[in-house]
Image (cartoon, rainbow, N blue to C red; front, side, top):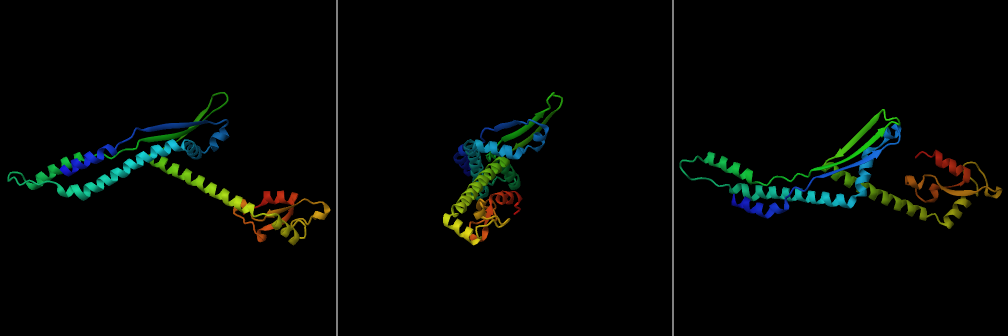
Length: 238
């Protein structure tokens, strides 16, 4: 028991339940259609990321407390439970003493910190004459907040990486490469045959768009006139 008391003295100041987090983000839709289509999950995720530093700090201290508590319980199992005292008094049954000792031991164990979190989003809509009102809510507890914050950060990182890769691909479109593609295609639009010599405005186009991971290589480039290039962009199905 003494080992547990000593462990509590060392660990107790660091294993604490922090104050609860209670926040709600509201959005008032302008029409019933917008209300029906409103993505509460995305709205809540974006709202949390707009206050990322604060949420990151608050989540981190609570995660740390849970990690310390897990280590605390592991230490109890490894070092303290095997040291439970026994009685040699002839009038006290061993089983009875152990049961009492175990009960006191369990009561002495520090409680698990509870990260109390309620972060919510609410969308509402009220009809022009106020006859009908609608409301939907989405609430995140601690686990959902932790997961939502990490998911939002990961999605942002992927977007940044994708944007950088696309910019890199576009940078490969040099004047020399443009000239090579025009010459290869005979200075004519590959879709309608319009020729630059007839006044057609010719563009060098990615067959598979860079936005869909298309590469800036000769096999993925073609000459198109301005009207066909615009039309192709509208019709492309990857």
